[in-house]
Each structure stands twice: as C-alpha cells, then as structure tokens.
Amino acid sequence: MRAELRVNMETGKLVVGRVGDKSTVTRCFSKYPLKFIIPTKAGRSETDAVWIYTLTYGGGIVSGDCISVDLTVEDGCTAVLTTQASTKVYKSVALKCSEQMMEARIGSDALLVVIPDPVTCFSTARYSQKQIFRMVGDSSLLIVDWITSGRHESGEKWDFGLYKSTNHIYLDTKPMFLDTVLLENTSVSSIGERMQDYQVIAMVILLGPKLKKIQNQIQEDVKKMMSEQLRAPSIGGISVSKACNSDRYTKPSLIASCSPFGPKGTGVVVRIAATTTESVYRFLNHQLAGMELMLGLCPYQ
Image (cartoon, rainbow, N blue to C red; front, side):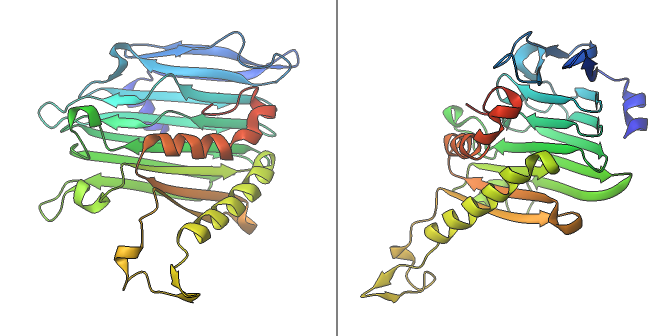
C-alpha cells in the first residue's frame, strides 16, 4: 500500500500527535480533489479527540479520480475521520474506475474512529476503495464502511457497474482481518436481483481495549434483535415453518450479524443489510452512543 501511495503521489497526509495534553493535528496536507476540514472545537471541550472531515471539490468523486490518504495517530491520541455527507461517485466515463486508498497507523493507547456517511454510486459508476490499518497491541479502532443502492429519487437502485471495498487490519505486522466486499453486474444476474429489497449494506468493525464495552453491548443487542425478528410465527402456540408459510412472514427491514475475530475474540465485525438508509443511521447512532464520552459527540447523531 505504501508503494501505491508513492506511485499515486498522496493527495492527503495527516498526523495526529499530542500538543500539551491534547490530541492535535500536527501535520495536514491535501490537494485537489481532496480537502480536510478540522474544526477548532467539536463537542465538549474537555474531551480529548480531534475531528477531521474529508470532502471533495464538486461534492463527489469523478470518473478516474484517485485519492490516497496517509494517516498517523500517535501514541495516546484520539482521532475521528468522518464526512459531511455521503460520498457520491459519479458516472463512469470509458469504464474508468474511481479509487480511494488510505493507510493508517495507530499508536499505543491510541484510538482511530472512521465513521463516514455512506458511499452512493450513480448509474454506471465504477468505484474501488482500499483501507489498511496498522495497529499495535493496545491500539483501538472503529470502522464503519457502508454503501447505498444509489439515487432513489432518480430511480437508480443498484445501477452502478462496480463497487469494491477492501479493509485490511494488521496487528504488529501480522494480518488480523482481511476483508473485501465486491458488487458487480454480471451476465448471470444484476446486483439489484441479488440484493432483492435491501437498499443498504454496511459493515462495522470494533477492535481494541477502549471499545470492549461497546463490543459486548452490540453483540448482545444484535443477538436479541435478530432472535425477535426471525422468530417463527405460531398458531395456537405451535411454531410454524417460515419456509412453508412465507405469506405469514414479513422480511425484516434491517438484519444484522456479529462475528468475533482476532486473538481470543478481541475484535467484532457487524454486518448489516437494510431496506432504508435511515434505519442504518438509527442503528449506528444507538449502538455507538456510548462513544460520546470518548469523542465529545455521538456518532451519526
């Protein structure tokens, strides 16, 4: 990844370090089409967290754009990387693919929170992103990675040509989490046919000691939520098979699963599919509300 960043000449570089007793952006560089906004105050002033907003000129990523970001969160610091709105990927020209790449290093006792709004790909768009995170033993990391089906107001639902999102997490140089989501129209079936009624897919990754309490809570909440939503209907107290009685079964508007990963289950990945973007925002806001004390603001509020 570092070699890729050199080849493409970084469009953004950020370093978060300690100045006095506060997490502070000590280095910030960006060039077209990328820009960073760093508020002087985000949330409660006593909270030690720096918020960084990324945006692109024109409000989206143009066909053929390649954005590469290098981010370092030094020991004991807390950084939040977010967006002001959904990341729009415009129509592909001559089958060109728009790309975003990021490599992040998270120091000892540091926390990085990556909580963008969803990616929204326009009709025929082709988009690929890759994120690499390098951690040490007591680093903490939260990632939200999600995509909507497109511009519903324009009648676009899963009309893009390609979406690929790769997330790699390394702990002390050893791979801990390697994941790729690939959505592509084929001659056999379209993305829309495979997604059926669901209009949003999302992934949430939580890892590290600072997020342990939230990890435990989200696992309990998802287990309870899905056991209630997927419980078979009954007649006279007798459970009835959903497969045989599909007319009595309403497909859940949001489904989720939780899986532990890493040594002794130190990390948790949550995968979500939903019929509306608003339902995912509500889910994320509720599940991540406990981070307000660490970040000064509640994610997705």
